[in-house]
Length: 266
View (cartoon, rainbow, N blue to C red):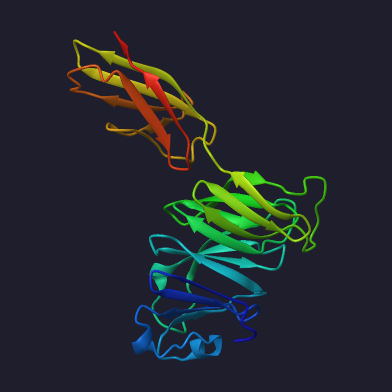
């Protein structure tokens, strides 16, 4: 397959990356039965091999598995490739390549090194472009929703800059090859613009804006998820059958951040 570069394990699946050899997926849910002794060279044993995918011009650095086990995101050490998404549900045999669902390349042509996934977001170390945050949609597509550049005055296809990303609660830790460690927040700022309760109808109406709209998911604690209204440029939730004024409501974002607001009686 080539030279082994990295290994990642999640939910019993192990993905090893092999630079120009693509990537391989092994079942390690039962270590004893799979005869793997944690030595990288043992991973090529066909007894636990689920899939090996090699693609044109591959230079596969790193791989990350989504929390639901549906998607695999790989990164490449070529600026023209960036990162790709693969459907893990398309595994049919060890020798049939997985189905690629999307590809993201840096708009400035910088090299992408590694990726971590939390929820529906992919946190990508992008060397001289810092860290990019991509939304992983239910269809397996990638869309940029955030970025933090540790070296905003520089760019290019070199290998200085953000090498790796680590997720620590609501903070994102970035290791920079020349400047050290950065701790940044990827947090939503929510503003509740409407919080009304109509006594006669028993209807609670909540409207809110978000700095990360429309990709984030907002929820009103105790009442349910809000829906993005593109025409209004806001999130909305209308709940019927609310017999009394709740007094206050709290809107939270799935990337962190919340706001509590008083409910007006109308």
